Image (cartoon, rainbow, N blue to C red; front, side, top):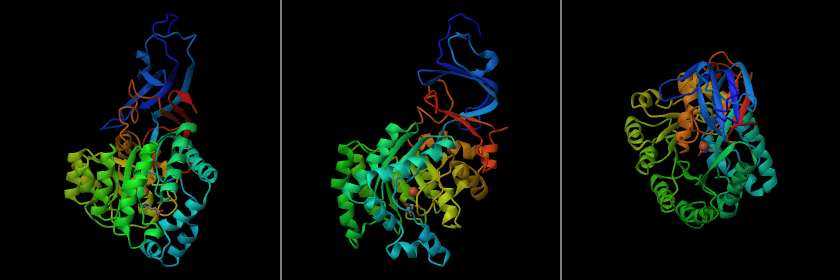
Length: 409
Ligand code: DI6
Ligand code: FE
């Protein structure tokens, strides 16, 4: 460091260890430094190689041996919703299955009712609290889906709230239109009619207000079939929106192959995915998103095909699926732990699953997901001894600081 004004940085972090994250390992650089300019990473490497900069004019942060990872990314959530389903949780514990509850008019539809009835401020505040909880655990980008409105007015309401959160909250929000999440009561026995609405008026209104970054559907026996999903994807394609899919969660309908044929960003859940599906998503560059929270909460026993995904080198992401029915678990740190304990993923795979691969699942891998020069300066300072600790322990939050686009939040 000297007074020579060789390099102008907005801030510099020293005395840190970096887990930069790449496709094969943590990308560890010990005794490192990281410099920020214009909200982006301008330099990183071993501290001894830090170029000269104007030390008097540049804020210098001492990490005191802390670890720094990319900001975490929750690439699948449903955090805008009304009400809760604690009562159904109780019913399940008294013997009813998730499918039984859905068939009896409960499940997703009961959250639809509560979401329709809730005013915008109530929904906004509840979702903001969930976003805060994620951010305190190191999350800097979150995907939020609609899908509890299921009519034009209320799907727009949900997506507007998600967009508003993105504008006013430090966390970046990517929005996903999930009109084809469940059949609303007014379309009972007329799923095709509802899909007409989703693909027509509903999606057109969403696009007109630029409310969605992607389109999703729930392809399942209790959701929509392959043909209906295909229609949703065709409509998305016509509007130039990328697709993703809730697929192979409770059975294998071949949704993943369908999503792959549309170059889907991701297929999510995938407990029942087979090798043919794995090959299809590999060929399409589609990310496999595993959701240990829903697996755990529904007490699923079918494991997602982690070993097959590894063999075929499919990028695996992990997300909370935070929602009131199947994963009322708004914790990315818990998902890291459960991906390892329940799915036998390694701590590195888990961390890659909420950084580099989660970024790819949202199509933002050029901007975030790793620590690299030129990427957005989204990173987390952790009080840990090794990055594996992030998946290993749960309950004492080691997140010291969250930096979003270069600013401490
Ligand atoms: N799969 C799920 O696990 C959630 N949605 C979906 O398509 C469940 C959402 C809910 O039960 O409210
Ligand atoms: Fe989901």
